[in-house]
Length: 125
Image 1: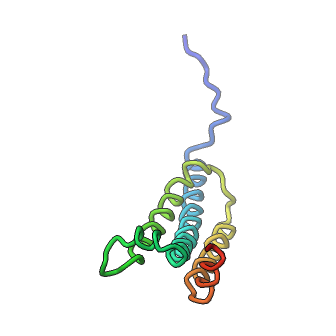
Image 2: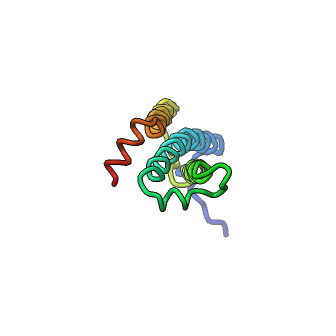
Image 3: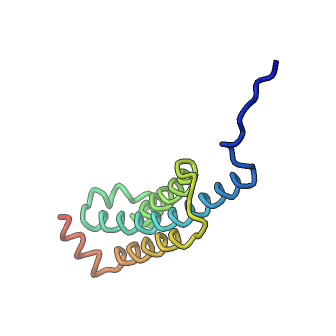
């Protein structure tokens, strides 16, 4: 006795892999934007709070920059890896995620620009 399994709801393998690859690409773009913003965020925090600056100093020769970059890269990598796990369907075009990456890069760059860094650090104090 065989039971019939309805396969209409399961997309063909090719469609599933294309959907997954789109999510992987979107995750890579989102992760790179998040990494840039995280590096800028940790930079501002290190300037505003001496305790954060000493915490982020993983290597004394490099200073707090070592912790800022490491934590920024880790946060971006987490987003890039976890994004396709939680977001299965993305638009076919990568441009929305390219825009997310570009906005993240601009924000991250602004946050490490000295006048903006000092202003944000004063706001946080």
